[in-house]
Image 1 (tube, helix red, strand yellow):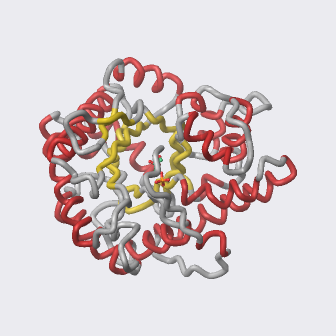
Image 2 (cartoon, helix red, strand yellow):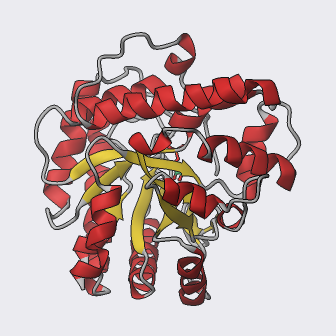
Length: 348
Ligand code: 13P
């Protein structure tokens, strides 16, 4: 019933807090480590996640952390499980449960997301280990169409996953990422996003998913990354909120945006613009790249930089916390935060 998810919703969708997404698969985490010259070993992945999760004071701004399976079962070098580290900061542990993207035959070079086989038993195991919410990320490409087939498959997969996660006590984060790739204008993104979310909600309802017990992780409605003009935070907020109001029932408690390759600063300013007036849902963040970029650059894999890197994480987390409250001003931001992170054809 709705009441079994209520305490979780109160924690994750609490004012001034959002989600830290550090659920990169081992291969994707390897890309992050390679960017600072580190090998993709379990030791290095653990060290990076320990740096992030043991940041003192993180719980003031972060309500949930999405982990990859490996991280859910890891501990600090002092022997405290990461799950306990999170719980002590009142941060809800979450888990990525999809098995990644593969080519979708019969489409226009599009993908589908694997992971339904064995999902129920994996969810039950993750719950036992302390996870309380789950994430499934699939993607939709505007330059590739999207074809009706790709949209339908994305929506159906998300709905099946959401039903299975709820059945095993996990709150599903529903994430159909509409990729930034392309030179289209913002109107085209709005049109595609409306189509995608209408199908997602159609199939969520068909699978008897409880709307009060889900969270959404949408892309913001922006122009394509290669479009001739950038849009202002106000224009992005207007289009994104228009789309959400048209498609998302108020029964859904929280909207936790992904950053999708926006710069740290853009992601924060856009979220702030979205919170300038009251919304029917908690509107917050679930960023990976836009919370980790300056942390990685500061850390460089050096133990003596850990403290500075954790400070960098707190700066971003606090900025996004203020943006959730609609009171971010952008004062004192570094040049690093302003750099775009968009990479054409980026794959997780
Ligand atoms: P980005 O914020 O880097 O787009 O990551 C989103 C995501 O799905 C990771 O959980």
